[in-house]
Image (cartoon, rainbow, N blue to C red; front, side, top):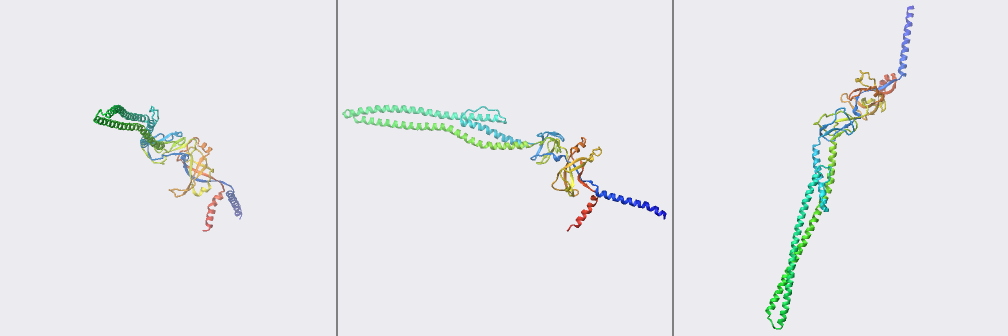
Length: 425
């Protein structure tokens, strides 16, 4: 009996201790908050803030001017695509442009009747040669014009000489006619006195008629020659007028052609410039997909990414879609880099900077995920101790969600199950 009483004391004490322990654990589980966090795996994604370098059209790589990791200034050449086809078209359009400008200069000189100016220096290739060619054409046309004018002038001189001869013949006929008229008057006076016969009168009348006919022929010929001289003078004037009209017509055609050629040149220059892929910002080259000339790249393909200077790396986490309502921009987080575990690098402080607007389906697991982007805080960057986060490094992310009691963690699945069970179908 006494032994039973002696054993009851320790049992009672143990039971009381167990009850006190359970009560303490219950109070702790119900009252003491624990820091909550959402876990999500991810990787370092340095290219998230980078600017892609993409060709605007498909082409063959001619020059690769950078290497992976090289630092560039904005506007530095990254890759040049082959422009042989565009160069041929550019040369053709430029030749048309230069020839049109040179023709315009010649036609203005022909229209205005001025001298051809000496060729001025020009940055356009072939401009001086084109101007010299047009100058030779101008001189040849001017020589032809002078020859035509000289021929017309020579014919007018011949006509003038012939007219002078006709005028001399006319004066001679007039003088002879005057003598015949005097002779007729004297003969008629003698005939009236009966001192001569009518045969002489008839002869004089015939001679007078002949003189009148000859004079009429000379006047007709003179009129013809004066008409020819007027035609020749008109032809001389027409030569210059036609030359000016042709120049005006061709100048109008060139005035319409030059803007079209200018637009084509501008478009070709823009296309040629876009074949030179340059750094959009100052930074470092990452993800270079070509290393030498020869490969073909398609329009819109990213051949390299330029990471801005003084920009820390970003981390992309694959968050479960069911947890996205517990995450918001600016939310603090902790990042753990498994690759740095052996080096003693502590967890890195970060914060949420961006949340994707739509969920994606993991092709391997089929789980719905939302991409969340985080950036290191200044303290997190200092904790790296000079080490660099490289693209593709795996990351374990813990996004702080606020305090929560252990009892809440234990009862959360039960309460959620009860809520789903009690929900009306």
